Image (cartoon, rainbow, N blue to C red):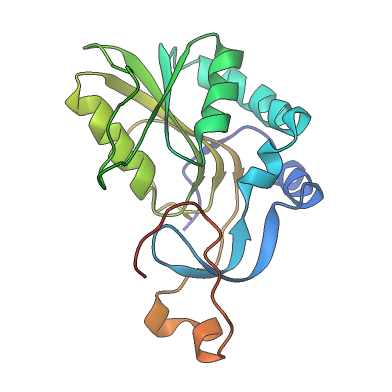
Length: 200
């Protein structure tokens, strides 16, 4: 399958930036989805340098602006910086959702009003589980989800919500469940590089 996302830049341009920033890693990784992959996109490496983050956001803003969001909402923790930079460039409000008890909720005085137009921001989507859970939270509060902005869409079309998906990069990545993972079969140590903790 191929991505259904609208791309902000040509694929070669995106790959060059990811590689130059050291964000494209090779090894044996446990993804937040629970799947295993020989590649990992460490978007924190992109966002540690504000000029790089600014280049990504600058490329995405023209497409995101067409959705006319009132607010950018990000799932914590990884997407907070991206969501903030995107909302600043769009000139709209920025909030994030947290999982203190295992499910996403708004805290710290954040709220959404009925009819508020919300753009979901996420660093990387493979299955889209975290950002879709955040979208359900927004809808439950009466907000309107107008679209999704992601730095890297690695879902190969599996993440295909009815709303528009705008991505800086779309890179098909190899994934396996643990029972069929060649790196596991070869005894290669597993690395969990993200921030989300769960039992594999």
